[in-house]
Length: 73
Image (cartoon, rainbow, N blue to C red; front, side, top):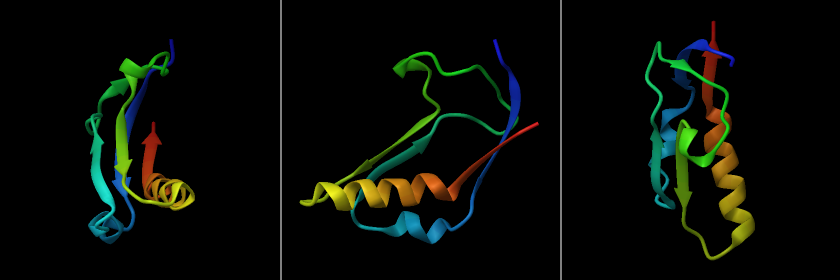
C-alpha cells in the first residue's frame, strides 16, 4: 500500500470557465493521505465534458487534467 501526503494545485483556473465543462470535482483534500487507486470507487476526482464532437471532448478533458497538479511528498 503506497501512501503519500497530497498537495493539489490548478495552474490555469480560467480554463474551468469553459461552457462545455458540465462538472469538475476533486474529492481529495490538501494534506490527505491517499492509497493507490484500485477501483472506480477510489478515484480522487472527475471531469464531465459536453460536445457534439467526441475528439473535442477528449482534448478539453485532457487540457483540464493536465492543469491539475498533484504533488506528493
